[in-house]
Image 1 (cartoon, rainbow, N blue to C red):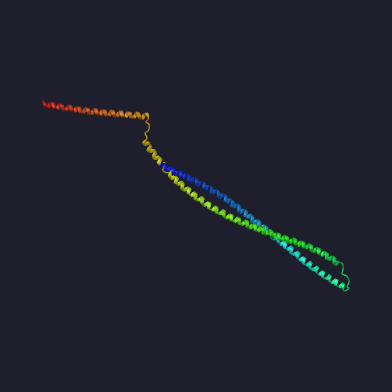
Image 2 (cartoon, rainbow, N blue to C red):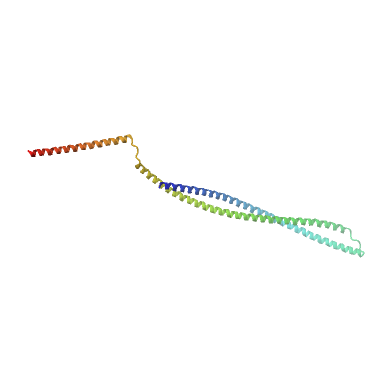
Length: 258
């Protein structure tokens, strides 16, 4: 019985130690996961703020570029229309000269050259506005795509980590419950072992003779001597009684013979 209880306690202790170590590791994992979730939430919040700010900047820049581009295009339209009208007048002047009218003033040629330069300059400005607008739109599309991609990755990572926290927490609680039950079983086995050891100790005391002390030996011998003396006195008394009885019987026989 003692060996069985020792074996049971040893097995229970091993199970308790293993469960406690695993529970402690799970709780440490949960702490790490919760810290990672906190960092992920912070990162997403920062991303949301940056995306909001960059989108606001894009909206403002786009509005400014579109306004500038529309203004340049309107100016180009007006100038082109003006110089097209001037060209038509010049053509009319040439036709009049052909019909022997006075020659057209020289300033028409100079105005035509200046108009071409202005148109070229405005066309360059228009191109810059258009390119900048296209660049802003491309950067906005790329930023939005990257934001959506990372946000989706963060969403998936968050869901996975939250599930890990949930399951690891449940498992650690289950292990703690098992540890409590195993500890109770070990305590019961320990109590049984103590009872067995106490019983064994009592049996051992009864079965194993203890060495006698000098006082115990002396007392035992004295008691034996006293016992022998008492027996001797008893024997002497009985012998004397028998002898007296026998003498009495003999006297009676003699008297009767006379």
